[in-house]
Amino acid sequence: MNGRDSAGHRRALDDAFEAAEQGSTYSFRRTFTDADVALFCGVTQDHNPYHQDELFARETRFGARILPGLLAASMVTHLGGLMSLLATEMHFEFLAPVYIGDTITCTLRIEAKEARRLVCSATLVNQDGVQVTRARCLGLPGPNRLG
Image 1 (cartoon, helix red, strand yellow):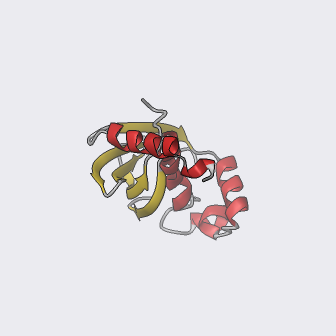
Image 2 (cartoon, one colour):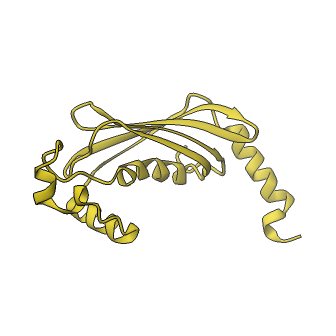
């Protein structure tokens, strides 16, 4: 048996599942910059003109460049990572654009515990109080580093 299958490791994961409390919430806030967009688009090869071309974006209904939806949505993975939550499913609804310079607050809530997985919801809200993204994720919990 290797270290990944040890009884101690399984016990730690069981303890993490038991310790997770339904209704617990965690939040994270950040302001997105042009550099964030450039790095994300470079890594993902997302060269959509809505994110990259200011002249194009000015002529759209958004009036300016917007972030890739998954860049803002990655805030959910930041909180999940601090919870040591290994995602098994993620669902996102992109409700409003996020612009370069927007400050977004992501709040993740443990909704339920089902079949050894945590069911979580997340909301992303901009500095004006507008909900820009709604998410649902399921995952296998590990030791929570958020408290």
